[in-house]
Amino acid sequence: MAYIDLPEFEEMSSVIQEKARPIMEKTGKLGEIFKLLAVDEKIYFATDAMVQGYLLDETALSYDIKEAIALLISKENSCKMCVDVHKGIAKMLGLSDQRIEEILQGVSAIDTDEKEKALLNFCIRASRKDNYKIQKEDIDALKEMGWSDTEIIEAVAITGYFNYINTLSNVFGLGQ
Image (cartoon, rainbow, N blue to C red; front, side, top):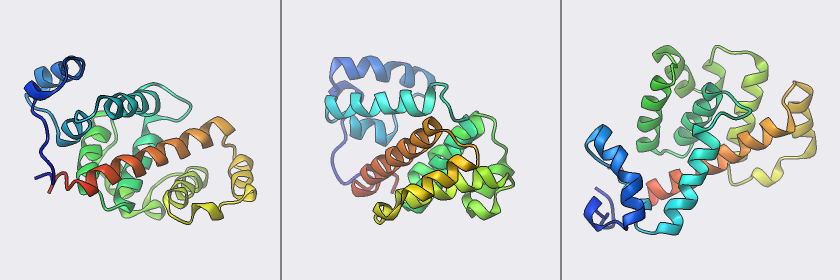
């Protein structure tokens, strides 16, 4: 139960109701994170733009890598609700149960190449409070492995998004 009162569908603004209606029709309910974001239209639409642009649209990174980042950062931030939600999303996107479990065990347990592991470890470092210690050499090492500037920026943006959404979920006690 959330630490603040979350609006029900009828209490949301009409523009947010329009976004909520397809979710309600498909699943019969709205998740707590949707309701939390619906408290403020500006926050809702800013967050929705990030979700659309980073996670749902086809981008430079594969959905597999994006969901690996989502799961790793959510686990790193102890956001149980986000881990559970993204386990389901990862399955919908075709990740096997084995792959999801490997990701949740940590980067070293993932059956993938060193290039992908390097990017995922970089994202974990980028998610931490001491990310200011990342240097040009760290980014150059990723580029030498074949990651483009666009892919690196996108990976860090997704990492930042999960720090943001995990913070909202954790601070307001969602999923507890």
